[in-house]
Image 1 (spheres, rainbow over the protein chains, first blue to last red):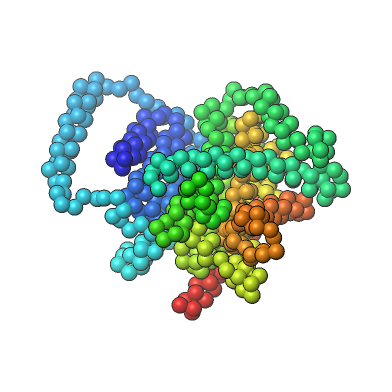
Image 2 (tube, each protein chain N blue to C red):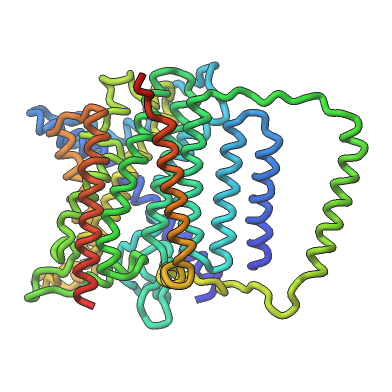
Length: 165
Length: 357
């Protein structure tokens, strides 16, 4: 059952990502990215990290992607121009893709950990455990990230300010 | 309880909840027209059926039979997706709300909540992060409006939808912050846990709801942010008829317009449910021993329904009374007044919780 659910949500995720690449209109790509974010959140929930899953929905799918959609709406980005495709890309690209995929899968299977597999519920689920980790073990990363976000906000304010001339 | 039993019970709960919710939405429209009418010294709908009670039925038939026009210049796929998104997000939040305590029917014990099961210790257990899921679904509700306005390919729709989305995104911040006070006091994110933290009474008749335990300011911040989230007066500039034609649903006709309409009223009901769970104790209330036993069995449901009805009446009352905010006043109010107030509430509540521990 869990394997079936993982394959289903993984298929949504991969399908959304591939759709993002092949769509010509920008807004459809943005909506596919929202599907990717949502399926990632579902995979997190499958692993037992429910707080992270919901925060992924609230922040990524609910705030960041809304801003992407605003930008696309306001800039009215047109359709993507697609070239006709080259024969070189077809002759070398498609077998190359297969070969690269096979090599990648082989390398990952070689290095699969034999003892510790991720099981359902292994990660810290409830919000209080995540909070404890964030404020004790990962405190430095947390504080540095907030300074990073502050720098981004200051940069945006400076860029958007009208020049006094 | 096996997975199959849970699935069947959940489907039955969903069917009942959906039916009741859509009926409530239809009759909220009737209630609004009647109450606003009486406030304006006229009768609301009074011809169709006794007291106009069949008016929602007539409106439903009208919407189904109206000409469903899709203008040729719209972005077809997104134009059709937007009202569906708005309605899906509006209807999904009800799954987290605990409507009653554990009931025993046909040999199955289950709490009256779509996502709830009876836990091992006899207490109902639902999703650990219930309130965050509701906030997440509220954030996703912005998409319906943003995409609707843009895909309609008309300046009035685009401006209306941009204003509505900016308003919703700004007031979501205060909405979430105002709930943090309650979460600090209950130290759990699950909605049934929050209801259980408010059981009990002082002196036998004053219930221990969070609004009496010090979250009075947070309650008002939440109500004002919720009015802005659901685009109701006094914050309904994006969709008022006298502004911007009709805002983001100008180009929608018949059933698609009805979907936006239903989504708006369902959001009102959801906000009422969350406010009653977080601040007014959900289905809990002081025991009324003077009622006959057959009504006592339904007492949690009666308490919950009365609270929902109180909030819906408050929504309609304010609609009939206040003028609407201008857009810059609206944004200033959200960022310069509500947001610092909600932050101050979080700090003061955290201080008191730390003192008590």
